Image (cartoon, rainbow, N blue to C red):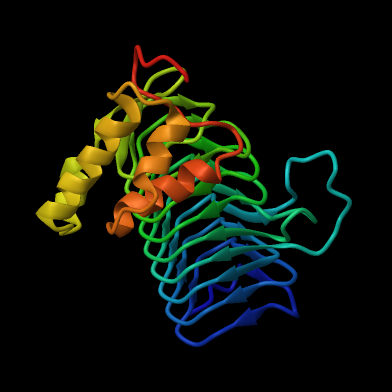
Length: 259
């Protein structure tokens, strides 16, 4: 059902079983896929919205990126299926740098969150109230970002990370850990999250050992990751690959000297 007061661009594609509330604007270059519900007074353009999503009132999706280099190039926001976008969320479209801002499947983006241009958010991610992601940030699958977090542009957050409320993140956060603070530091492993995701006990022990070698041994970081890179554990290999590919450097626990 489409409310009679909704304004829909003639070139927008609205699939079957879509509900659009009053005073919503659906602009150019937009696809709304089957089963999605859009509450009143939302604004969507230059977006591909997956099936069975819920987009609550006053959200703005696909607006111009807040980047002075943007020159009107055709870019999009892509939102995966079954994702929930709560009130007053802003998702900016990409720039020529990558073309798209991407939100995965089964995510929840809570009220007043902001996801800037060219971000890539994985599947089953939770972004808390008033949390902001600057441009080009990447968030791994199943990460949980609590309320009022700020993430510096080009930072990467690994899989299964739990970030504490109010954290200011300026360096990359490796997978499977908890972190908090200004500037964010590691607080240990996200054991609760790993157990909830039914990661095997022996794999959790492998991750613990990798954490110990990286941050609690007397090895330099390079020597530690060299020791770990032949691990048979895919979880440990994820950590090693993440560190190898880090451009901003990784956050570490408190009182760990950089080596």
